[in-house]
Image (cartoon, rainbow, N blue to C red; front, side, top):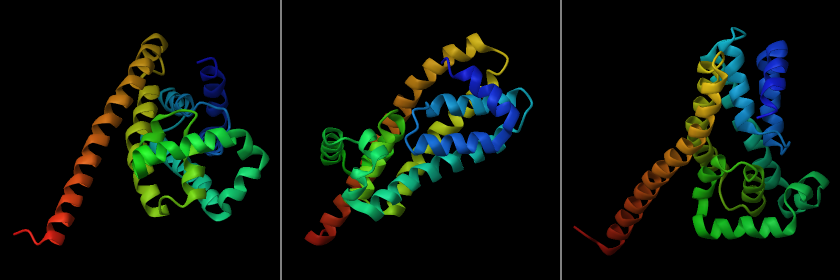
Length: 209
């Protein structure tokens, strides 16, 4: 939370572009909390330095372009990207193996879950691209659905708490818990739809009436 006030000041001085670039850097693995960046973007709109709905659009673009860039770099360069200094720092061999194990457990659904795992997003997206475990359009769909939950929540929370910092701090903690609940509900829905689709396919193959 110590970063919140400096980010608010910086974003208020430089506007939407600063928020957009900061979120791109978050996607590239910069050790800057994405959630706090989104909240700071929301706060400046509550203080009158922008429009909250416009900020949601800007932040969604920054988040998705950053995520997609890491996925596409991994997809283009494959395992060779692990030799890059920054990627090697973000994704050492042990962590790369751990992310692969998570893919074995959750499959492509990990693309959705990763958005709610601070510190894991970049590693998951690079690994997904490098191992060609998921196509780009499916990646974008799953990551985009998760972003549509998390990004507006943090931005509007910052907007509503611009002048009520104690209230905001309390709701940040509640919001983090709420995101886990929402992601769990969404994951259950996705799993249900996937199971229903697989069941229909099996039924067609077996010649069910």
